Length: 394
Picture 1 (tube, rainbow, N blue to C red):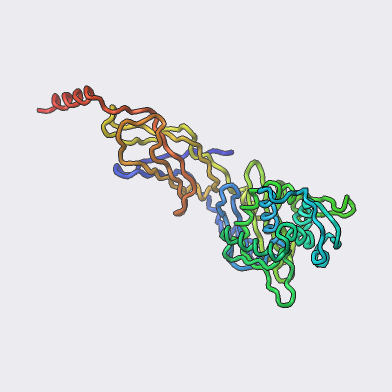
Picture 2: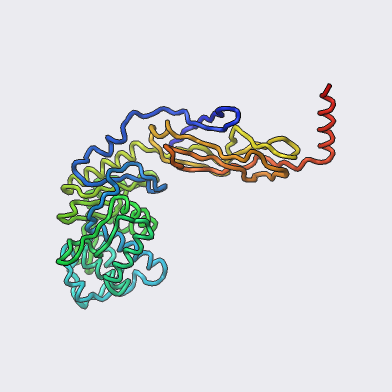
């Protein structure tokens, strides 16, 4: 972790204001996101730890997610597993309907029985459509019931542009509708999915097997998993009307980014654009330790009826924020302090805090606490103070 010391100034005697004294980076963020703009329909880069969106292009535009819908299948299933309602060891019997699902598949046959774990691996690693349907039927009794839950969960997550009509993402048949979503909505889904480490254990597997080793599961992300350091997910999607989609995740030295490219013209441009976004994240953003726990701050709070007139403050936590150099130059820190507080004051008593703002958005905050206790002014201290004041008058 690289650290930056922020120099704090008090501007104007009646107003407390802190500004960072750091150099700006002349690089244009617009150039970074737009380099491959003609080769995709939407893009987004986010810090997976804080959830802050760092770059975006047409992120609210409606697109067809294709097999990215399987991310929601995985999320709901993992939530059901973690709630104890189902288990990865459950036996799943393949239905006639599941055996007839087309597209990319692991060729499940009616009456076969597989562990839920194996079907989830086939869904996440190989994007098998029939495996996704089998999972949905096991969890909610039918794919229709599961689709209803998918839309309910999307609404809960704030995915306002999303509507699911399938559990597999295949192009619709006659009288059916296409699944719809957006880069922003899929970012919300990815953030929620990352709360479940099991998903990344599957999505980072480049090659696995099915049917006791008789069938290979090649990850649809296998080239990026092999060639891009730290790449471990999340999901690809493609059909003719959707183009080539990818919601990706990569982690290096403790820092994780989410990069999304939707509607790319071919898989080569999809991979190039995703790598470009991730490279920009890893090369341009650093997590700076803005202030440490126990660090004194250069202002105080006035104490009413105390043994002393004011109490000094220090932070009660450490704060680190991911920034690029250009953002560092614009970062502002504003204290939020009471005008005064009444004695007695305890040591380490919370009194206000520091807020860190960038372009009108709150990025982080730390609480402040007193450095020492201030007892209530005693009778004799009050008399002494009065006599001192009187002796100083003419």
